Length: 233
Image (cartoon, rainbow, N blue to C red; front, side, top):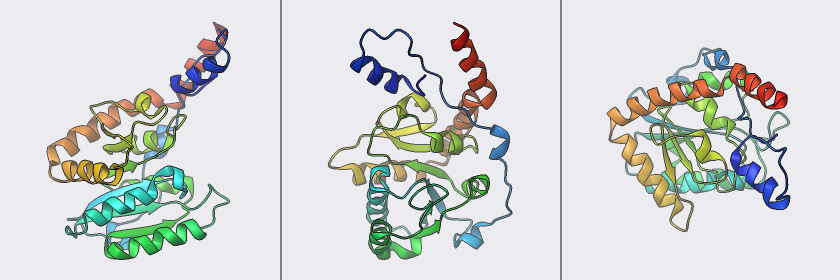
């Protein structure tokens, strides 16, 4: 069982005669997308007029967080474009500082008023933070198997900016996401995508609604149904 057709193709590449491999997309508990922890933009250091981007994930090179900070530096002339960085080095056993994370914070000093690091946040509290954002950015530079953070961001109605790596393109659609190519101009491409949504509130609203609708495809109920249907077949 794979969580994306991308991974299924990898299995079949190494075992071309495989006829037992099938894809079941991951699912989440959509009910947990509601606010569980009262929090405000003011507490996070943001104003109501700010355009808040959110990155939620492990702070490791493969997730593209360094390139996202570079994009924020390119956008430094607009003080209302802000970035909320949620996460530490590794899931619940996460360290909130190591040489890579320290390097990120040094890089972010150039736009320190526009970037906030939260450190590791418990999973059940993450939706409360996501609800304070305008757009979710998932700038992975490696081939992701699926993209759980994308689905969790869609479930709170956020437009998505992400990349064309691995199974990510199977999770989003052109209605709810801007998919950026990872190349030598990647930070510039991220900055362009951010500006596009920043200046188009109608697109923000329509893409957010599309995210909410698409997230229903990744409910835990649908996951279970697809899992057992494929097992039975």
